[in-house]
Image (cartoon, rainbow, N blue to C red; front, side):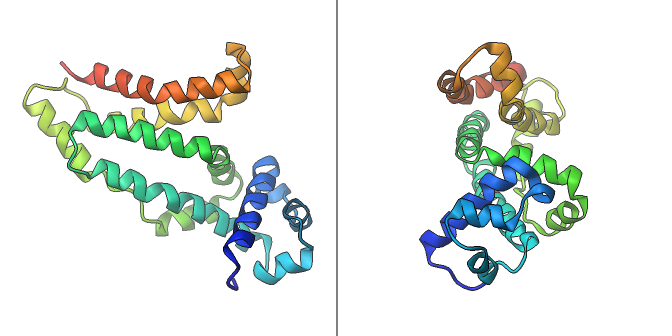
Length: 202
């Protein structure tokens, strides 16, 4: 990929996100992305030779923005409970700014498993080593209930992400408009952290 001016690159990425989110990788067309970006198709192909290359760039860009943040939270010098609170805050805040990402990943895990497998085999995932050790130490010291530390990780991710994946259903069931649902998501940062902390501490 040739170097783009930052504003042009951002326009192309945002446009690609919009189209990929609506139609998935298979259904998206380069012409639609070019139209969304306000450029011609030839210019889009000049920078991204194929839809696959553009998709991979968008996917990696989004993932690589989040992974370092999560790694930093889980391996900081903060207390365990502070980490849970910081995780919920940063993770939910990030997804609120990148709402395409959860469904985007799930779509491609199902529709494009070869790319997903290759990408995840090479990607640098957050390593929760210190976080898991803190849980084990908390259990030994009697501060925490006996629990598989990985269950807490699963809870943190799943409780934070489902309101985005299931947004259309949950918004309908709760009878909330877009603004009220956004407020619910904002409140969820504290709610998720409180639920997890209260469920594991003695």
